[in-house]
Image 1 (spheres, rainbow, N blue to C red):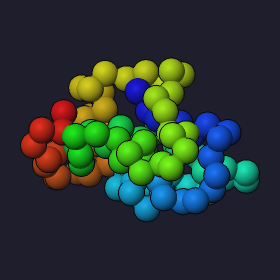
Image 2: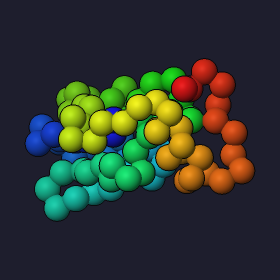
Image 3: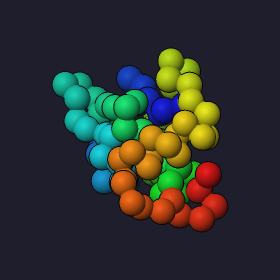
Image 4: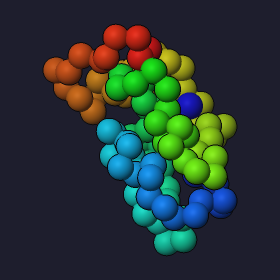
Length: 90
């Protein structure tokens, strides 16, 4: 499933620079994650970087956007045509 950012966000921006899918942007009050772009870092890393770097733990799985690993890797492939997912990331 995609991740989301909760209202606990302090607006530090640490997550935005870590997102290779460019799924994170600054919203009106807090940062937001575009679920159409978020692959939980599958294809890039072994774990979700936004959750790792968030100092207040506000990057969490979004139960409204549940996807299998296969769906996430397919989403990654569509966003990175011709690319090869990093080994161990799916």
